[in-house]
Image 1 (cartoon, helix red, strand yellow):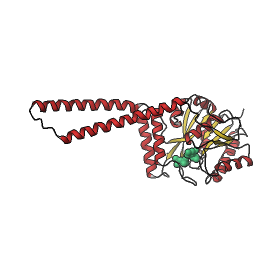
Image 2 (cartoon, helix red, strand yellow; image 1 turned 30 degrees about the horizontal axis):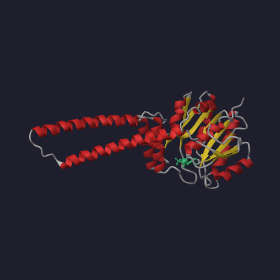
Image 3 (cartoon, helix red, strand yellow; image 1 turned 90 degrees about the vertical axis):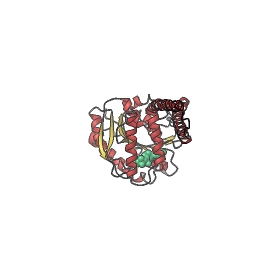
Image 4 (cartoon, helix red, strand yellow; image 1 turned 90 degrees about the horizontal axis):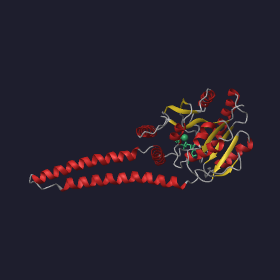
Length: 323
Ligand code: UDP
Ligand code: MG
């Protein structure tokens, strides 16, 4: 049986960029079909993540022009890139043998797909696309992304350095991923936990073809928080450690105050008192905040809300929701 490929592409308000990149994806798909003997009915799946512009109309027009190679799923509302992508992957795994997920803005080099397919044909179930160069990113984006990777690793979460969500996954690996039921999702951290034979291919990242990034600093910070809290409990352990260190310092402070008391110099400084109070209460609030983050996450997990809901779809009209 020939391998059927699905290229899975989340799109949010991408009407400016889709008319250009949709053709690029189709050219690449045709090239992959003919070069690697893939199934002729391999296809591209766009997931419209609740866009408010013409994105869904564009996807529908692509599907009308070429109903075999272009498909679309429409989210019932904007859920964010991770949910849109997971929804697409979970839906499509029943209709193909292998998937490649990629952003729709043309930033990731499509030519890396050739090597991904070759690695799949060599027996890999997961192939990570890794940027070997970030020169097209702004200094700030580069710095914040690299600090985040370092922070995650120091928290014990295993993520692939400089890999975003450009990756090949076989339907076998996706079946594995489907057993991860968490709602607080961070795919870059979850996929390595699925296991299977995996490897990386390297590519240079370009600038966005059109439109603007949907990841301003506040969203990046949110994703970073999700990444850390969904992958690691190290912050909780750090709180305990901090508690111990502060207790030790307090104990030394207590000894010091007793000694000065017994030596007769009882005039203790008001400034040092206030400084210690502020310091300790600040640390306590920070720790409560970290605990709160985890409690919030537990709260969301216990609700078992669906991670994605689709309101329209060109693949199978029966599919609308997370299982
Ligand atoms: N995206 C999405 N939902 C969102 C935000 C973004 O599906 O709420 C998609 C977006 O259309 C793009 C991909 O996620 O295909 C990555 O977004 P973007 O290019 O804006 O991020 P950046 O490359 O700047 O990190
Ligand atoms: Mg982008």
